[in-house]
Length: 199
Image (cartoon, rainbow, N blue to C red; front, side, top):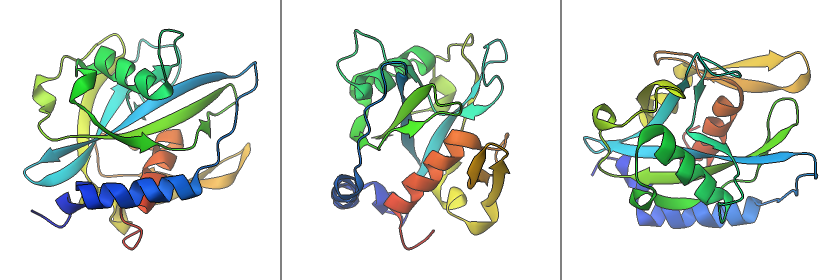
C-alpha cells in the first residue's frame, strides 16, 4: 500500500473524525437561507487516492463551466444533508449512494452572496471508474480526477482574493480547469485534515 493510500485507511479515518469533532462549530442557517451539501469524493486509482471533480454544464444558470463537487440543495425528502450529497451525486454521476463509505461532514460554509450554507461530506469509494460513470449532461459537462499527491504539492496551489471578501482563497492548478472559490476552499480544508504535516 502506498503512503498516500494509507491516508484513506481506517486509522486515519478515526483521526480525521476525532479532529472534525474537535473543530465542529455548527451554525444554524436563518429562515431565509437555503441549505445544501456537496460530496468530497475520494477514489483509488492504482493504489493512489484521487479527488473527483465535476465541471458544471454551460447550460446551467449559475456557475456554468466551473469546477465543483457533486451536490445540490437540500430537499424535504432528504433525511439529512449527507443524504442530500449522496442523492445529488447519484443523480449527476449515476453512482448508487450505498457504494460510498461516508467519513463525515464538515462545518457548513456560506456560499458566495450568503444565500446558502453548504455542508461538505467526505466520502471514499475504492473501485470507481470515471469512464463508466453515467454523467447527467444537463448538469455536468465532464468529470475528472486529480491525485491527492498533486493537490498537496506546493506548486499546484496559488491564492487569490475577491473584492467583497477580506480573505485569500486557494486556487488549484494542473487539471483541465483551474479550481477556485468554495471548491478550492473545501480542498484546502480537507487537506489540512487528511495530512496536517504535509500542507
